[in-house]
Length: 273
Image (tube, rainbow, N blue to C red; front, side, top):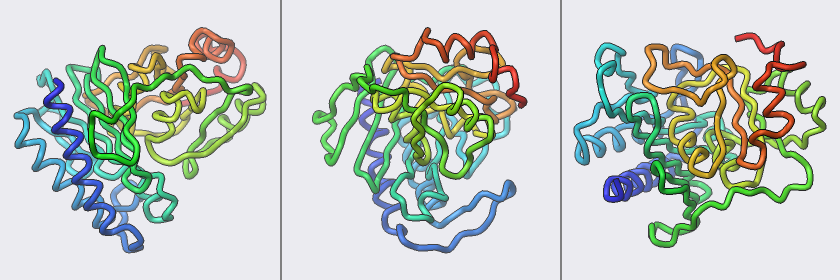
């Protein structure tokens, strides 16, 4: 797993370099779901998918090349990738876009790499080995293990810059949370770092939006909890859409918001999927 992880980190660096060649360009087309698609998305996807085929024979499910369920249903291992998570952030030039590469074993992420090339920040984790962050360097040995215990005086809630909802705003008001906005999978990684506490997401995401950052959060002691099942998210489902969820830092597990959410108390029984 260690050698595989190093290969995936290098793949993410290479894809990030390619994306940055297009940073600042504004041209895009709209996909079937009205989300934007840029040349950077496609070029990153090409690099990642071709490179993954050179390091393993596992099948690949990518946002830009979706694999039919019948072709992946029986796979023990599956790559789930988003070659450019946060295309709207990329187009708005706020630096908060990422590359997400995850390896799934049956329904659970066992390896995850999230790279924000404009910020020169890399997060990665493998199962039972902790979560790490690498900043301003491409030397993997310079990475530092994430210590996720937050020292925030107030509870910081992260929200999507482009996909917020009224229920999130009501939740922030009810619990007197401090709201901050981030793009892409950086929200979940920021919680793993201990720089924020909670990320409620009550509208649509797909498996490639969360899989890589999910294991980074898990390995930091936190969790993404599914609103319907009250369990951690599952992957390689027939329907690649995630249920609504809340991501909790390690420090928020078994605290008031977590317990209210798990019991569907008050505002949480109003969440409709």
